[in-house]
Length: 292
Image (cartoon, rainbow, N blue to C red; front, side):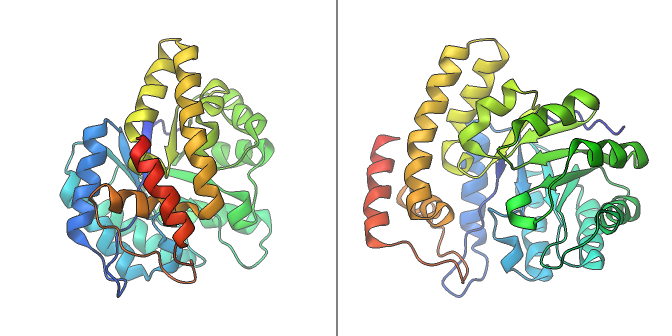
């Protein structure tokens, strides 16, 4: 199996836009530098948090390029290349490889209902044509496909370039099964509100969207867990969950962008059809920023 050696806290990077939805490169740089200063181990680029599924392939490539230019070799980078089209995914994977990304990831092809055999071939083709370690992005509520321990064992047994799983699911028994049955792979927890639980069930690290503005909190949580200070880790998880519960009420991505804008990094709007943040939501985000 292809063990990337990756672990720790990876920020699922938000994408800052101008009002016309062109990329705000200056804000992207500020966001990356803020996160690196907070101590995160890497970035998951152009995933769900980054609104990649609402962008063209060309714009996703622009973001991949700029993130690599800004970060250099300071942190690990995973490029999300998943799409509804295998050829587009392969194209983006090859581009990520040319830029020097450490790994790629892909959500299962969505919209159409595919048999498991087609989904397996989608992943194999992306990995084999790019010759890069690939993380399966297991996001059942988003893609309609749920990776089971049985399918996982088959796939990782058949393709050595499959490196691990980004597990964005509350099914922590499945997460534990992935890691327990195939110890050599890397498994990242995906839901921020259960980061500590995911680590306790065997995750090597976590990839999350609220790390964009709470990276230092989750780095401290991860460090506390690693040295066995579960009380401190639990307290930090509780603090994060209190904030996350408010974000879920008003719209997570809109709230995260509003918080960062209030903190001095102009994130701009989310792409349509994501709705703008309500006035009530904006007021709530001001309170969160005051509490940070």
